[in-house]
Length: 369
Length: 151
Ligand code: SF4
Ligand code: SF4
Image (cartoon, rainbow over all chains, first blue to last red; front, side):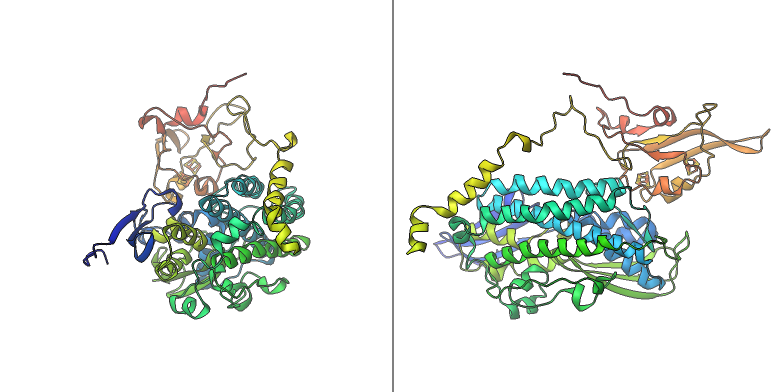
C-alpha cells in the first residue's frame, strides 16, 4: 500500500512504533483522507527474538522458560500449551493433581490478562480510573503466582510431565479468597464503564467483525465469540481436565468493540466459576508424571492448541528423536487476530484505530516472537 | 421518560463517580513506600543466586558436578574445579554466574543435587557497570548488599 500514489487529499501517517496505544512496538501505517482511514499496513517485527529458532538449540526442558516470554501477560497459558504438546509427543499425561492445579493457575492467568487488557483499553479510550483498580486486583493474582512458583510474570510454573512445585501452604485459601473478592470488583468495573455514555459511544458500532469474517481470517478467542460464534477450545477439545467443570461460553451477536468488552467481562466471571470448582477438589497424589530427567521423545510430531486468554494458542513440535526439538512452531493468537485490523478500521476514524487495537488485545511479544 | 431523565441528570456518570469516591477511603491505600518500606517477597521467590556454605564448617556445599551449568538454557554458569589428590574429589575453585543474561527460570537450582545453588529472595540486583553483573564465587556466597534506607 505505501508505494501507491496518493491523491492530493490523501495522507500517509505512521502510528507507532512508539505510540503508547499500540501496546508495545506495533507500527501501523495509515492512509488517510482527513481523519478517515482508507487503508492500513502493519509493520511488525520490532520485538522479534527468534524464539522458534532458539527452540532448535535448546533441550525440551530448557526451552520451557522461553515460551513465557512470548505472551508475557499470559505466561502460564503459554507454558501449559508447550508442556501439553511435548507431553503428547512423549505420550504421557500429567497426574490428576497437577492437572487441577494447572487449571487453577491458567484461569487465574486469564483473569490477570483480561484485567491488564481492561485497564489499558480503558486508558486508550480515555477512562483513566479503571486501570488503577484493575492493577490492584491483578496484583492479588500475581501474588498467588509469586507464592506458588517464585515469579510474577514470566512464571515458568509448569514442567513437562506435571509440576515442579508443590502447592504452598494456604494456596487453596488464597484462591478461595480471590474467588470471593473478585466478582464484586468486576461489578465495580461494570459500574464504571458498562452504562457510561462516553464508553458506549466510543465503542458501540466500532470495529465490527462478523462471524464469517472471523472464520475467514482465523480469528479466535473473545473476538470470535463476540461475533456470535460459540467456539471455545476448553469445551470443543477439552484438555487438562476441563471437561469436569461446569461453565458457560459467553457470546454476543454484534461483533463490535462493545460486545468484545462484554464478552471479556463475562469470561472473567466464568473463570472464577471454574476456579471455585477446581479448588474444591484438588486431588491428592503425585504432581509429576512418568518422564525421565532427560526428555527424549520418539520421532514424530504433535500439535496441541489451547484456549489462551487471547484465542487459540497452538504449539506444533516436531521431534527427530534427539533431546532437542527439530522444529517448534507457535500459532500465536495475537498475530492472527491482528490481521483483521485492516478490515475492522477501514472507513473509520483515527481514534477508532486506537480502540480497535485495544480490543484485539494483542501482545507484541507474541506477534513478533 | 425515565430514560430521558436519567440522561439529563447524568445518572450513568454519577454512578461511576460514586465508585471512584468510594475507593478514596484511606483504608484502600496500596502504595508501598519503597525503599523505606521494603516489600515482603514470597518464600519461593526466584531472585539473586546464592552459593550455600555448610553452616557447620563454612565449607562450600558445591561438589563441582557441573549439572547447573548444563541445565542452564543461557549457558551462563561456569564452574571451575581442580582435582584434590588426597580426597580424590573435585574442589571448587571458582564459580562464575553472569547475572545479566539470567532469566531466573530456576532450572539451575532444580538441577543441583546438593542444594548448593539457590535463588534467594534478594531482588536488588542493579549495578553501575556491566562487569558488576558477572558474579564470582565470593559474591555468590555473600550475596548482594543493597543500601538500606530508613525514614
Ligand atoms: S535461573 Fe535459569 S537462566 Fe539463570 S542461571 Fe539458572 S538456569 Fe540459567
Ligand atoms: S549443580 Fe550444584 S553442586 Fe553441581 S556444580 Fe552446580 S552448584 Fe555445584
